[in-house]
Length: 262
Image (tube, rainbow, N blue to C red; front, side):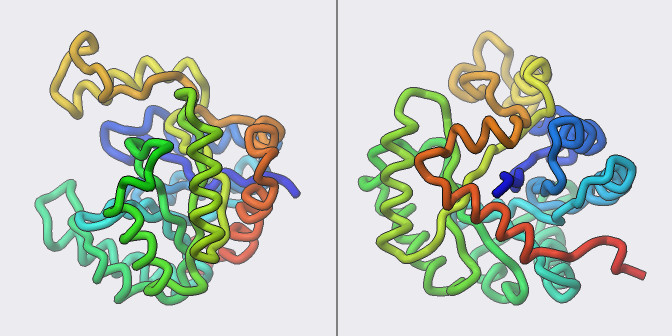
């Protein structure tokens, strides 16, 4: 089973991603990926450029989006078909109409209203520690998602590379077992090569209105948010092979392509 990268942020996530969609697709092709997803925050704006690049390099693009909600943990959303894509577009339009230009205000009730024909992955917050059993708000939200998105929900596993990954992944895995939902391996990519880390730091400083010397914990703590090879991701999640398998399964279920639009 080949790993599929399902969480990739491009520069269409304003002041967050440090690589163009074309660069990410080209790098994915050079690493041997046959399928990847693009999941910018509350937008599908980079999807056309990614689609054109995917055609050029022979990579299948899974359409996706990261939904940053005002009242719950973020969700990755992938349309299974044209109906799911229409629902995702309607969901984002609702959020855009509520907010000033450049922002999108989404709530849990919006997701539940437009959930049909979509697959969702819960994104554990970066601030979630290995002792997240103490974070009752996060746990309550995940349990609510399980109820409201039954049969459509996965729990994401990703590494922070801060020393407690093994413990954090172990607890997330057992939370998924307790709630009877599958887990999926995520890479949380923000740039296509490690050298772009410096640019990503600068973008963070612009977004947070601070200098590189005062940014502190607002910066990613390392340069690991680049697109890794399938072999490396499989190695990093060797203790949870089903999480890698489920990434491929989601890609197989979500077959919508922009070619279907007229």
